[in-house]
Length: 288
Ligand code: PLP
Figure (cartoon, rainbow, N blue to C red):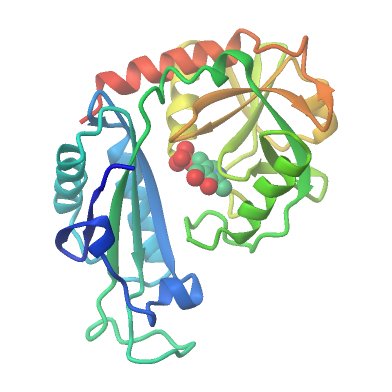
């Protein structure tokens, strides 16, 4: 791959020269938060939403934000420019920094600044992803993550294991289930459509409050579609007319099979593709 220019604590460096301490709490304790913002037409999609959620994640973990929103926007834009990104993603991670030694107690934020890392992921064709024409298949797995999934931490071991379980089952992703109800996908929010109604789990500590979720639900309501925020089961999903996921990098993606059971006729229906189209069109208009 072409050598990227990445950002580490104020510096723009070739990716091979960017370094973080072995004592960094992101590395030792998964003590860090992240955001992924997509880029279309060389512009940032939903930047504001991601910046607001980042601040909330930091607040919930008592981490002092080391960078202003304006500066963060500037770094995002500079990385897009330096790396010539037309379509792709910007990954951002902020950790509680690197104290002198390993210790469970948080370091003093006055002497140990947070670590800030950003890098680009070039994905030409992200919006025109042909997978959206066919939809994806998922399996269900038990949700055994911690209780604060609303905080976007870098603690992604279980979601990674979920992706591997999906791969071993020959499908694309996994939907997680807690007490009989779907929480979300490994890296996306989950929805079903029944009799024209869009059904998705309400925002609690049990799921990440997706930025794409917020935008898609807003566009759905503006298009006079009915949105019902409530829990649903795998059985209900298998019996639904449609299913789909949302995330910053997949936008809106139809789901056509759950645990081997075909949804509807096994092809994307009308609601998910329409929402994908509206989301892409409207987000591009206000991209910055
Ligand atoms: N849920 C989880 C667990 C995620 O990891 C993600 C994104 O990474 C999402 C939902 C979707 O959030 P967003 O739309 O902000 O990308």
